[in-house]
Image (tube, rainbow, N blue to C red; front, side, top):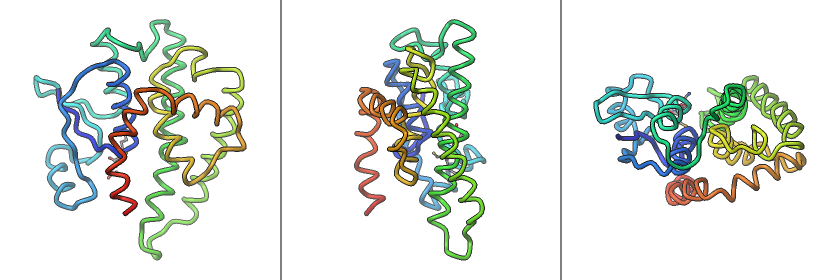
Amino acid sequence: MKLHYHPISSYSQKTLMAFHEKGVAFTPEIVDLFSPEGRAEYKKFYPLAKIPVLVLDNGWPIPESSIIIEYIDTHFDSGTQLIPADKDLARRARMFDRWFDQYVNEPFQKIFFDGRRPEDKRDPLGVTQARATLTTMYGMLDNHLAKNTWSVGDTFTMAECAAAPALAYARMIEPFDKHTHLTAYFGRLAERPSFLKVMEEAKPYLAKLMG
Ligand SMILES: N[C@@H](CCC(=O)N[C@@H](CS)C(=O)NCC(=O)O)C(=O)O
């Protein structure tokens, strides 16, 4: 199976982390959405032009990072079980996965990409709202993590795959150091071998981007 992704894309990193957690192999297909040619080419394959997309050996495409993780977790027994067998724990893992995507990753992307727009095309109100969402979420996560090692108690799940890249990027534009439990949680994520591997792959691309 082939994974269309980019090493610095946070949603790609989320799925990469899941692949590493499970020890599942894939054929990498790096997509450059920053280049107009790369984007135009990719749009022919996936008109929404979002990464990641997993393509199975039978040609069946699976878009959306959470759905890719669902696929690999239910089709491969190896490594970490990312969606708990218990229905209630599974629902909680999915809920945190949604929270990290919608209220950490999305506001981060809004703020980051707004900063790359020409001055007259920026959206200050949207950025203020995104920052408010981020800080609200930081507070909620901090409370939860005061009593939990991972999102779902002691069980590392798909939620952590969503959390690590999203928090790593979000903290660069909105630090969360004053939230000590969230900071400690991020410290645990930052030591996770699957995340270290993702960061290692991203390093040369990030260096190039920062120029
Ligand atoms: N909901 C999607 C979001 C994917 C997404 O927004 N990916 C970003 C890269 S991190 C992207 O493809 N952005 C390109 C664009 O929006 O044009 C998922 O979970 O996979």
